[in-house]
Image (cartoon, rainbow, N blue to C red; front, side, top):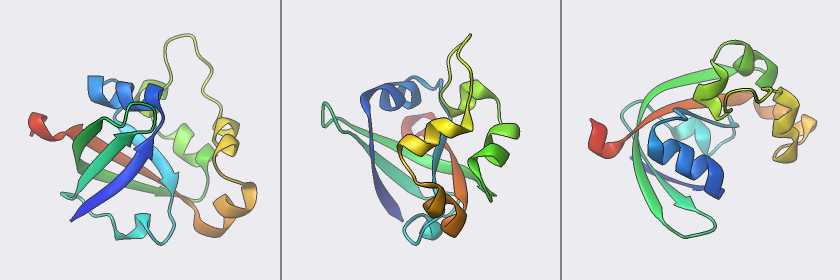
Length: 114
């Protein structure tokens, strides 16, 4: 199955380079359909460029705090000397949404790296 997701420029480039390997989302109705082996078509919101990735692992958690505690900061998009703060995700999702759905870490590799 192919899933479509939009990304801002920085996380798009980090996934394209292989630096960021885990995309973080709510575990909502749309994301609950994702399975290992599925394909994700990421679209860069700024440039409209597309990136195709394969889902290699899924990580479900109750909160972003739990997700952050279980993964290296670089794998979720933080650079060296940058503080990994789960509250950063409140820019994208409300506390109510997080409590309602929980969160999902989607580990991906670029499709041509299979």
